[in-house]
Image 1 (cartoon, helix red, strand yellow):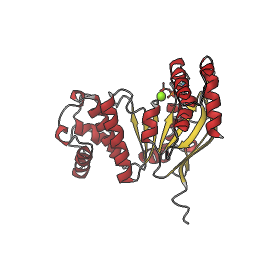
Image 2: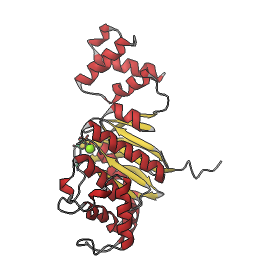
Image 3: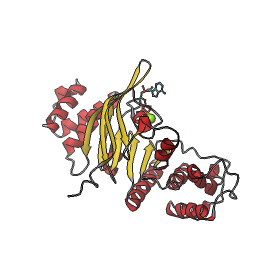
Image 4: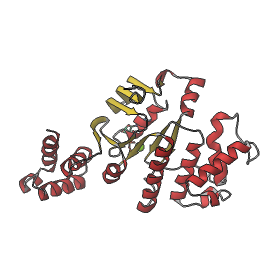
Length: 293
Ligand SMILES: Nc1ncnc2c1ncn2[C@@H]1O[C@H](COP(=O)(O)OP(=O)(O)OP(=O)(O)O)[C@@H](O)[C@H]1O
Ligand SMILES: [Mg+2]
């Protein structure tokens, strides 16, 4: 058996990150194999963005190691760091397009790491780059919008432009930080489906942060749950039982409303008793322990 395909492309080991008095990550371990689609699931402040930012050297760990595509990321500088970043695409919640530029120009900026200096208009880009950009726009279903100003598109369309822009650098890994947090449910589904399709077509490895449990379960190959900077869950989504799904909710949910919903569901399934409802957290905790056993 070849080890090449099972060798992880991302490996975090014991990563702790402190910002002054705040500990954003605590001893986080994570391995992601090439081609895998992983969701980081957790509430606001659980450390999702911080973890993602370690993967392309936007943050350095206080302690622990971060290896991506065979490089120890925190040791990379200058050209080596740019080299890594050119192999890792990043898309964000707020798309971060240049509003006054056309869709095509925004996509072309994705190739800037391989050309020197800023470009004005379309003249600075090669014919090859323009053809590739148009190809990516076709892939995300926006070819007919190529010459439209980016700020005239809907949120879902803008995120699809951001995906096309990330593809310009021919990434091997795609990082996505809450890519659908500002979109309505229908656009969210379209954007998430598109990311999966493109990842499958191009053999991309994807690490995507989300806070919606349902979406994570239906979309990811594997879910990594973060809570207060700790990895509290690391599970494949294949063949999850209802009890395991509830365990995921129980582990990542910390709001009262979430706990009530989980407890109600557990009672309905006979996993918890109404008496547990008064102590929702305990019910979830014991169900999680039961599902683990
Ligand atoms: N640059 C920074 N300086 C100080 N504290 C930070 C910094 N970046 C993150 N933190 C803190 O680290 C913790 C984790 O933040 P992070 O942004 O990773 O969470 P998150 O899971 O992405 O949350 P959200 O869902 O709201 O985006 C938070 O308490 C946050 O305030
Ligand atoms: Mg975040």
